Length: 210
Length: 210
DNA sequence: TACCCTACCAAGCAATTGCTTGGTTGGTTC
DNA sequence: GAACCAACCAAGCAATTGCTTGGTAGGGTA
Image 1 (tube, protein in one colour):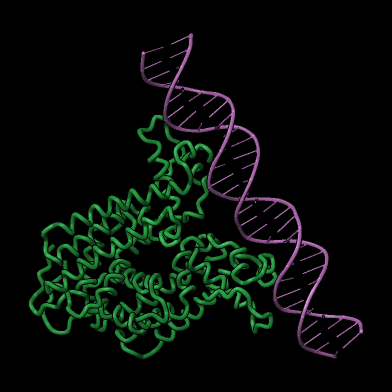
Image 2 (cartoon, chains in turn blue, cyan, brown, purple):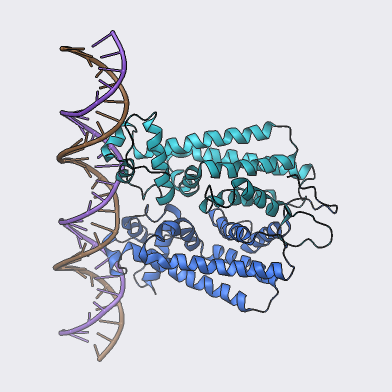
């Protein structure tokens, strides 16, 4: 994100610094729209100097995405193996996702915008695997929810999964850390809408106009 | 979308045919990732020949997006001026959006993926205007809903708007026309989740099992 | 026959792109 | 003070990119 133009040479880890700069540009302009000269300019060096740290522009996104996904799925796994009830697990998973948006905005944005395209290349095949893994997580949570009576019995699990997956991540397009709403607030509001809906509850039988 | 390699020269409108081919490529690969040679190849002509029909690659997206948006907002306006009640209007707006995903998948996808980047250029300033216009539509519908008692009184309108706007369009990432679910089915399911939530209602009757 | 028009080809140019190569700098270690 | 090293520079190359130019095929029209 923050792209300080020039930094004292005695930085603890220049490599990760450059990665952060690149991530910020990839997230806001897109991978293909960002040139190695853009990254180098933002870092205050020449484009060729980047190749002292990285093999290629591709390997930069690779490292950004794989590192982030590794961490994220570690958190999901921790939720799955916990002994909370189904609804709590679902809420925790949503909260963890919003936490990721808060703390790794660039990475989430890059994944959202570029995964579909990058996934086509062999090098990024792991993106599709992670996607399948993510599906496992959500489907499991939803299945448990329905089975234990926490969620409606008539849910279309597959469709609900896609709804959930999508709605959880799109907030990255507008959420800014340090704004009026903390990520925990956004998560709670999203959960309220998701779980209870936006309609005024009726105690009588709902007239479902079909 | 459909990219027939070679077509008889006596087509009613070659221009719109080329636009459709370009839209398909822009949607699946991204604007910057699609070269004029890609488009020409898919159309069975040479890249230079595209410039008989269009000024530039940019003007192709421009025409694709502006045409689509003009049509879409015409539909939204029709809903706003109708004399349906608030909840019906909201449902109609969601249905119209899913219809757009069904009938103009490429255009919606391009708008979703490229608007943020393209909007930065003066030529595409209208994208930001349309975005503001879209906000007007949804906020109006939500406000009316709360005012008439159709929606919860404690809704955070601004947040709900973003939730709605986002969830309505992301389905373009996975929805395929001609699949198991018609766009009307998807719209109804999304509306059910959105209005009533996915949690099992605490107490009473609830007969919705179509 | 002469003319025009739409749709295209053939060739290539200028700019941009990712990346390479050989060299320099300043600090640390023994 | 010699050797080493991470970080960077300076220059440029090959490929790709959007786009231009001058020309051509073929159908319609008068």
